[in-house]
Amino acid sequence: SSGINAESQSVLFSFLPVEWEYADDADFGDEVEENLREMLPICKEILAEWDLLVNEDKTEFVRFYIADKTDVDEKGEPLRGREPWRKNVSLGSKLCSKADIVHRCILANVAFEKYSTRP
Image (tube, rainbow, N blue to C red; front, side, top):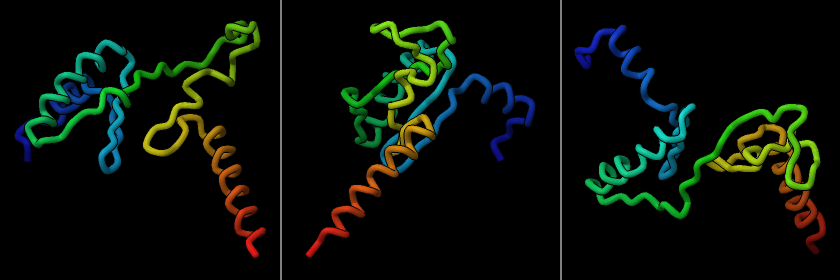
């Protein structure tokens, strides 16, 4: 046991960003981007203690939002349902479930075509 009571843990964890991880990948989510930007050098320092590196070239800060009905992209086309975050990938899956399923169906069809046309 950590010695921290449940109420204190609740308060403590309310200040930490949401995280999800797999193997050597980790994603952190927070409502305030600045919190995440401040975490990056801290994560680098802690991971360096175990000879692990953070690849900043692969580090992304993604804004999640649902576009308003009146929001348009740079071409003047409606943005709702096509927000940029929907195409981002996290831990091998697109962040938008619908986009991820469509992508996986395409990959499956390509694989099936390759298999079915083999001599």
